Length: 155
Image (cartoon, rainbow, N blue to C red; front, side, top):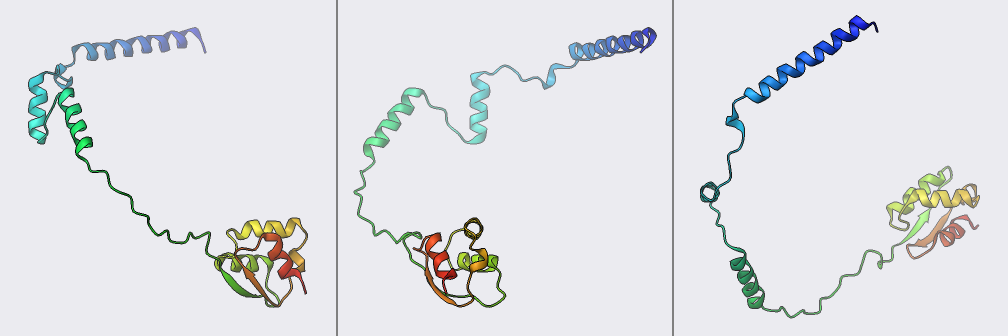
């Protein structure tokens, strides 16, 4: 960059700064917010249908509300069985040509396992992916990955 170009660029910045400053200081102050007064607050609240109260009134209302609120006697509720407590059972029929991923997806669909990807990863890390037998197997949701893997890989 030559010195003439640099001087021209600097002059442009100074000129634009001067123009912006002129507009800023001479602009109409109509859009600036006016000073907040009690009258303007009261007018705003009346337009919105609201009411202003003092801190003392608020605390006294809050105290009377808590004192007047009856203490509800808690009755023992019958707790429905959790989803985790429910035992799902199924007869898993593995057919010839079924992939291990399909078997895992079927187990997840029937709520025997929570995540088919985790079970597939378990089978792969234990070298059991190719050992799945094409037959019927009894499985339930209380069984661990190890137990399910032993069941579907045993002959």
